[in-house]
Length: 184
Image (cartoon, rainbow, N blue to C red; front, top):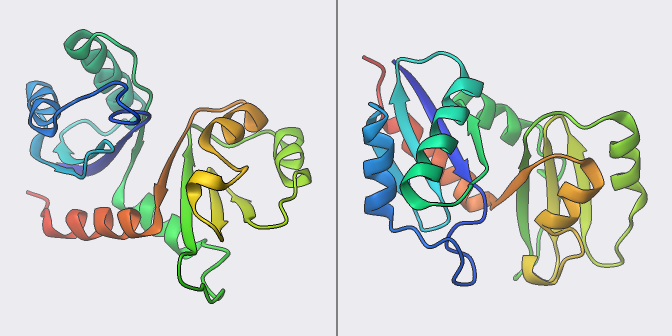
């Protein structure tokens, strides 16, 4: 079995698309995924599957969530190796942050076109910094994610791709959870 991480976009935010983690876990188990573990309320699920195709897994999860909860929820599926690679590519790893500053990562549904990437890079902030690397956008928020111009919606519009954003601590915790799940 292979380990995967599903990152759901836009659940349990501002009273919208409310899903209890026990219900989310049951939906994944109904797909015959094993060792299903949820982490915090923002839609992070680590699980094992016999399926080897991440795009197929994504499609199965999105269809199951639509049938179970009644609304479309975009899902990004990553392997632990992909998450590890994303942490290694962190362009801000040598930047010292001050209190209140946080790093966030937007996981994209694919790689943006060159024109889209240039469009994103052209937008500058006097406060925050942004870098694109592969299918991730790294955002160094100096005054909090709630105030950045580089919101998830902004990134999606600029890159014409679906995105879901997590803070750096969550990414690290998901990797830790993956390491506790062993392949059979």
